[in-house]
Image 1 (cartoon, rainbow, N blue to C red):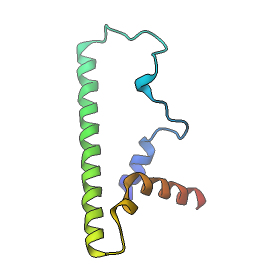
Image 2: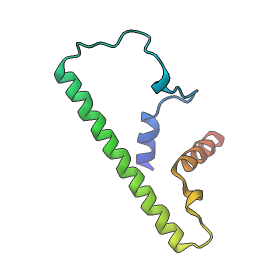
Image 3: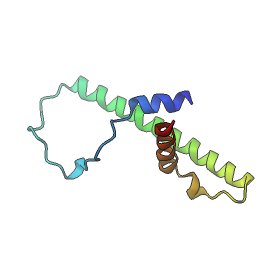
Length: 94
């Protein structure tokens, strides 16, 4: 539960999702970013991606374990995105 609270605290505010792949930058991209800063940002991004993969793997393993214990539960019912949305809805109603 504490991990979920940390994830929620770090989440972006709800609103429309913008596809940044197809969005042109508002200002020109800076080419003169100091190498040390670029390296530090890259390092943080790698750590965040590793944590996200670990969370996803833990969830998948948990979903498989639950499905093996209960024949009436299907993995699609345990989809991480659906569970987070359901949890958000339940918290909003509380």
